Amino acid sequence: MEVRARAPGKIILAGEHAVVHGSTAVAASIDLCTYVSLRFPTPSDNDDSLKLQLKDMSLEFSWPVSRIKEVLPEVVSSLSPTPTSCSIETMKSIAALVEEQNIPEAKIGLATGVSAFLWLYTCIQGYKPATVVVTSELPLGSGLGSSAAFSVALSAALLAFSDSVSLDMSWQEWSVFGESDLELVNKWAFEGERIIHGKPSGIDNTVSTYGNMIKFRSGSLTRLKSNMPLRMLITNTKVGRNTKALVAGVSERTLRHPDAMSFVFNAVDSISKELSTIIQSPAPDDLSITEKEEKIEELMEMNQGLLQCMGVSHSAIETVLRTTLKYKLASKLTGAGGGGCVLTLLPTLLSGTVVDKVIAELESCGFQCLIAAIGGKGVEVCFGGSA
Image 1 (tube, rainbow, N blue to C red):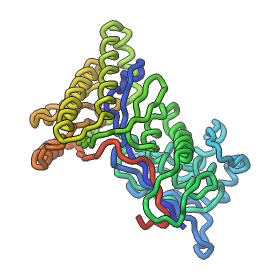
Image 2 (spheres, helix red, strand yellow):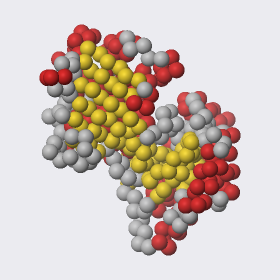
Image 3 (cartoon, helix red, strand yellow):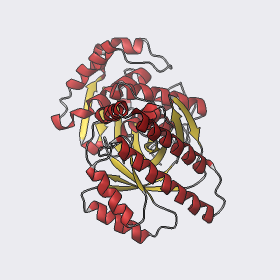
Image 4 (cartoon, rainbow, N blue to C red):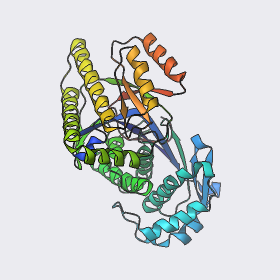
């Protein structure tokens, strides 16, 4: 028996960095996903190990179930349908299991993700042998929520074969969880994110679980329903960034210029709120969609200007901005800045020829370009592997 799960990545449409200082921010799902398949062996397979295959990395990890039981005896004894946090002691034990796999030095950053896998698997499925295969359309470490999509898709696949959720296993098309089951998926995914990131906000896993868009401010999340199609060109500059250092830099600038930065954060708050209103308002015809897209373009440009005021842009980001501006397209960084990804709105009436030219020019700079629909579905599952 096999189940597959897919969970979307995310972008920040408005409000990054300012949200740390009390402003509103808006995040949305994108139709680029992480896929997790879970298969339990048949008795004839004679396989008593837990395997994790990261296809995109060409990596495979394997543990005898007896070894996991030996190192983590307390996990299954407290097996509970309620999401549970990983204690420091258990984390040390899991780290020992991960170290035994000798992850290549160049990919050592994956260790926390493997740890999250072991914790979620043993908590939800216990000591059963299985093979879990992970593939993704999301670039790692670029601010598109790849770790959250992994945690959500993994939690969904594991819960699909548990007594904790209600799903029709005879249905062999992509299907969604009920509201209460989605809440459970989201809570387990958050525990995975805690292992990977330490103190996550919960925004990434919530967007990946429920899809569409959310508005958040001071720890409060509100789900939004988009009433218009949005398409973005996502340019990955491939420039790594230190999120903590960038956040600290904005805070230091705020201490040096409290009055000016207060105006910056208030302006971002207004942009996020206006963006939410535009996205949720009905758009009955092409004309009103075009008008809304023009307003969104202006808000994106304003938000980018304010992010530059915060000091979180980068020469690679500025190259993307200059390139897209030549084609009269609006862009802004998404996430931490200092590299990472840049969003460019692709208006409904924009010709494919122009899009191709923009992509060709950006790729000639060494950037990676992805096109994504914004605000789509959340996590889904499929039994039998036929979809």
